[in-house]
Image (tube, rainbow, N blue to C red; front, side, top):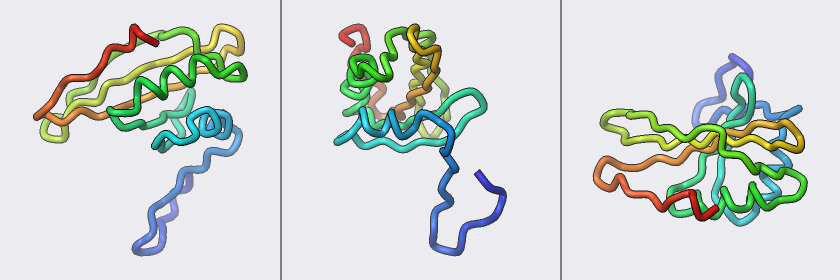
Length: 116
């Protein structure tokens, strides 16, 4: 990601070169997902109604095999709702991935990830 400002009216796009984003994007085809580069991995945002299907695909994809939920946590963003954060790990490749979904304060329910 650069520190340069994007031209007015255009969103700044993170530089995801050298990350696993292309593989993740392929596995999540048909699911709404956006990515940003983090220090150790890629953070993928998936809407709440698609997050469980996204987690299933990331686990079942042979090339990615995110087969270990390393940590499940949440961040209270006060008025903006709560981010549910899934830290995934592949025991075969050693790769990490963070998946986030945002819940509105009006509806803090989310299907369980234990079905994944």
